[in-house]
Structures are given as C-alpha cells and as structure tokens.
Image (cartoon, rainbow, N blue to C red; front, side):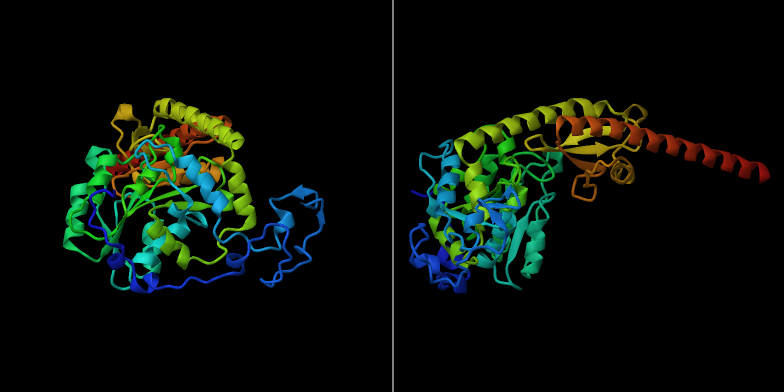
Length: 425
C-alpha cells in the first residue's frame, strides 16, 4: 500500500501527455534477436560506414561496432534490469524495483527536462528549488517557460532542507508542480535527511512530484540511496547517473526510478531511440559484478583522497572552513582574504583570484561558487587522483602566498602614498 499521499497523477500530469499515443517504432513489433532479416526500419543492411577489421575501427574496438547500423532497443530492458539489481538493497522498503519503474535518458539532464514537459504547462506552472543547488533545474525551467520558486537551504544548519518553508510555499501556490531536491547536494556535498524529504512527500493538499537528484549518492554511506523508496511513494522520482562514481560521464546515461505510472508517461514522450547502442553496451558492462568491483575500488581511492584533502587543505594559510558535508567527490571550501591567524574572512575577491590564478598559471582548474546562496568566498574542488591532489595542495599554497604577498606590497605602497600626501598637506 502506498504511503499517505495526496498525489493524483490524472490531475497532475498535463492532459496532452496523459492522452499521448507514443510513437511506435519498428523494434516494438519484432526484436533484433540476431536471427531475423530486418527489412522494416530502413536501416543500412551493409553495416556502418566505417573501415572495420574484426569489429574494430582502425584497430580500436569501440562498443558494439558490429551493430551500429541497427537502431537500439527503445525499451532498454536489459539495462533497466541491471539498474534495478544495483538498487534493490531493501534498506528502505521490502518491495523490489522492476524495469517498469525506470526511465533512462541522455544523462540526468534529459530526465530533468522530460519531467518538466510531463507535468508543467509552459507559461503557467512552476517548479521549486532550494539553492544553492544544481543549476540545470532552473535552466530547463526557463527553456520550458516555467517560473522558479526558491526556498534556500538553511545556511545556519549546514545547508539543511527547510521542509516547513517548502510546504508553506506549496500550500500557497498550486501552480508549483515539481520540487527538485539534490542529495547529496551540489555544491554542498551533504545528504538531505530522509525525514525532511518525507515531510514534503506527506504534504496534505499539494498535488505534485518530488524529484530527488542522487547523482553523487555512491560517495555516501551504504544504504543512503532512496531509489527503492519509489515503490512506496506514488509521487517520488529518484534520479541517478553513471557520470560520477561509475566514471562514465562520456556515455551520457541517466536514470529515473519512479512509479510505473510516471515512468510510462516519461517513456511515452521520449524520442524512440534515445539511448545509443554504444551507451547501452558500456552501461550494461559497467553494471556487471566484475566491473562493480572496479567502480567500488576507484570510489575507495576517491574517498581516501577526499579525506586527505579534508586533513591537508586547512593547513594552507588562507584556506578557511569546509561548508556543507563530505558525502560526495568534491568539497566546498572557503578562501579567506588573509590567513586565519590574521583574522581572515571569506572573500569572493580572493576566491576569484585564486580560481583564475590556479587555472591560468598552474593548470589546476577548480570551480568558483562564491555567488551561490551561503557560499561567500567558496570554491568547489573535485577530488582527483593522488598525484592531482598533491599538485592541488602545492599550487594552492603557492597561489595564496602570492596573493597575500602582493596584497601586503600594495597596502605598504598605499601607506607610503598617504604619508607623502600628509607631508605635502
């Protein structure tokens, strides 16, 4: 039985989407099982226009090269089964995820956009976000002519979600159709508590969808993912990706775990062949047991370097506190206007100088986040390899030394000029 929810899909989704007859493609009728002569999809029967030798392109094997002339599986059942197997941990429910619970897209960005097109009427409806957060929610909303309502995270409580304030906004505005929650947060790297998410899901009158973005969930502790919880809540969507812990950003594969009813609507409105054969083949390979071992080994190495950065970065004069959490593969780090021992405070000017100097003179690229809510003077630093972290620590120390040295020289010159002006006066 579903949890206590006011959600009614028939009144929440756009009527045209509810009535949509999905495009029926050739592979819906007969599958490519390798034995049929396929003369139904207007494909090139002679194969891809590539010089192939034993399935390799100029000596380089590249996914399912032999099948590139065929359209991919529009339903991606094998991939969905593997994703379900990965997330059927039963930490939060005794129920199991099945392929009908899934929509897969070209990265999480397709999922974000598909949800907007499914539930939000352009020029009328709205979404709610809690900044600082991932910027594509707002960008996609703007593309779809939707207003963005903002309920910032609580900067006095380490960027905690504010479910009471969110629920107040939902009560006052029925045109808010989707709430996007990022957990672990980007750029805050902290998990949103399950109880706070449940408080929004249990809103007594709001008829909308809660979207939980778990792009970085595999860097959190075991059992953190709420993907399985979609079997309990009819209006919960959990987004995930293979771009982060799996190290497959280049294949562009995102997934949405949700109710079969919502997944069906998303699958109806997508392009028929949105996941390419190479993407599907690489994703399925990554989800095999032997490759999950590789992913988890690499994840442990990232966590080891993350812990090293937590220890070593604060030892550099001019590096302030870490904001948010450490449940991801990055850290949100304050940059001060002077060393802490001299009363340094977070400074956007210094952080921007450090960001530019690292990239332009040291070849180390981090992300300036100082204009985000509650992130004054902050840079977001991705955890790299052991060698990359060593380089970061060295260059960060050197750049900050140069910044403070130049600032002291400038201050001394200002004093000299003022003294000279006083003498003349």
